[in-house]
Image (cartoon, rainbow, N blue to C red):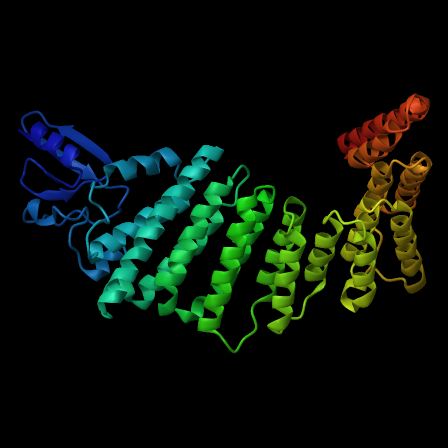
Length: 468
């Protein structure tokens, strides 16, 4: 009879009636202990960490909830092990009742169950991309259910409901932000990011009006979403999703803090994404400039990152006058002139416009300013030389071979004189080889010489690393 009760408890997944008639909450680990004459069962609820020593009247009393009804002081006994694996948390999800979190109005025990389930997923340590995606998907689903429940009880006007308390809303905000960051892993797909976007929009609609002080956290979440979307700029839908997300952010900002300027970091993250989308849309540059002027009209002053996004949008627009336009924008802005990043983009723009010699002029100009002013604000870096070499490589001009080789030699000289970041690497040699590959069969000896240099540099770097 006791074994039948055990099977029934396992199948229903709620409460288990022991041979002594006491109802215990069903956990994830079950120990069966057989004595010589007396067969009894003990539930080890390691997943819930609840006090199960107090017997309950009947199991039917708690049929609608996986938790026994307990006093508020007992809710603090919930804890989650510091380290879990995905399989263990997955088993806990299977053990939950089929109708968990589906009640029209959550009880205190269901809210605690939601918090503990999310904490378990947050504490697990996935080992594969599939497990990372599974963890993020489960947390997204659970947080969405929580937000929906907040929206329902908010519409009913039940201001005294526990789920609308300050502590509960603060916990929801915490798990929502952490859930968005769970999608930041290598191999994440655009469809995955859209799930995080949908959860964010749901949070803005249902939960944020109850906690206007969370506007800063909302800005950070939008920055994270724009940064993740920037890795999928080749897909046209990413540009559409980003624009819709920006519109929602501006609308929400106007409702919560109309007297404050929109956060510049959110703007720059969006503009960087928009600049990377420009080459893959015929109207990309026009759409970018529309958002740029919108930002200016709202009183937000662009910084060097914002100007770099503007220059990048023009540099990769495919227009023949891109180099001239980027140069004009660079000289017109004092903020841009003080940024080495903006100068690097101007070098790239001249190379893409078919005038790599103008880009190389920018390179020597920065070096001259650095020597005269002894400043590091426009210090020559690796990216400047790489952009200039690539400009010559894609130009197809007759002198491209000698000019690219001279830049490689300059990098090596700078490295030998103490500029450790200027050592030519595989990217530099590949760009130079591309210039030589377009010169025809007569460039064979020069290509062979460059390959020997690249091989020697690789062997020296490997020897240095082993010595260190």
